Length: 240
Image (cartoon, rainbow, N blue to C red; front, side, top):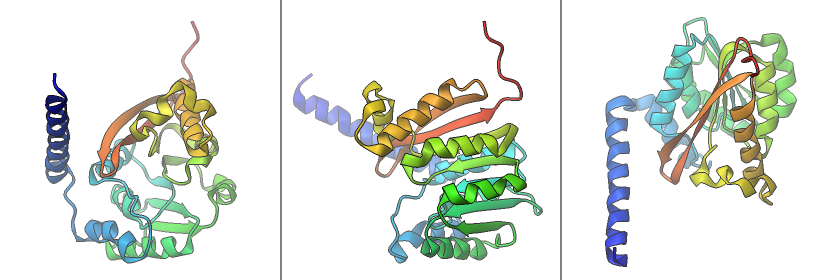
């Protein structure tokens, strides 16, 4: 195959993937006004536009409903987009607690939830997650934990997620694929703290006998990334 043909084939793949993403989003994860506003909020408030995709949001909602979630913990609120998907899976007496280090981001997230009529079941607590997590032990167990915050702390967040959940709970972490970089064997010793931490996270959830895990590649605007999804086991499988 000539270089021209290879380029054409690559272009076709990109166009096909983009079409599939758009078609699936339109069919399975259309945004209403509240979701669209939450997605646009980062640009309007000088925040990073790093929210999850609509399909990822719908997947979170499906997972929350599948496990009958009444209490959800989110680590990293940003503008409240992912929290909006999650809160919509809760019953009227359910609760979403989102941890956010930035007061500015927290205010935008609160506004997103109020706009959607979910302020009664979603709250954001401000501060470093590692300082806020210990206080949540009295409010545990959580039925679903979504991790989407500073990447170097992912292994620590996993430790807390295991402490704060129950058998049958679901733990989801974003950015665990990142175009395959954290999956390379040499990433364990990477000089980039985020890459090394994501490598550790992936390896741990794949091997921990307390968890049944899978990672799914999902297209995003900035390239291929995805979730690592884990279910907390009732009983670790017997050896041998």
